[in-house]
Length: 220
Image (cartoon, rainbow, N blue to C red; front, side, top):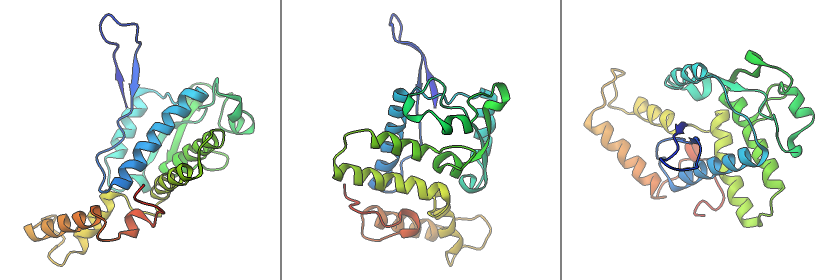
């Protein structure tokens, strides 16, 4: 995310821009992340959720995020009391257990990506459960809902470690390649084979369940 200053001579205020990730290997993955981010922005605006934490903690999160396998092993500062001023749909016990009455440093804590995305009882409700709550209150046709659920399932399973991230998948491909000698040297042959594999998966010629799972109606 980054702050976007208002345009000159405009009544538009300061804005926050999501910059979620690099381009993924397949259309399905790209669609999943885009839909996840768009839904999250709608939920933030609709329920007036508060995700603010000190910039110093954002900097610490960025340092952790750069480490290998940070999705599974990293702990990130994240806000507990996101429900301040929220829509009544999300009020109640969940708001209380997430620290609504706390102030200052108690407003945020270290969480795993799995907890942030999927939730953990007594710690945080989870972004995907919040999105599902939002969708349940929207008029969405069955086909669209099925497609969205497939997208959210990918995010959910990657956050939990059930599916690999693209970075982990590439590391394991290189590590298991016959030419790799555990010396951090990527030969032309390794690079070529990796790109051929990526191209085959991206075109749909080859399945990769450890990366994508087995989504229904992937073409949508």
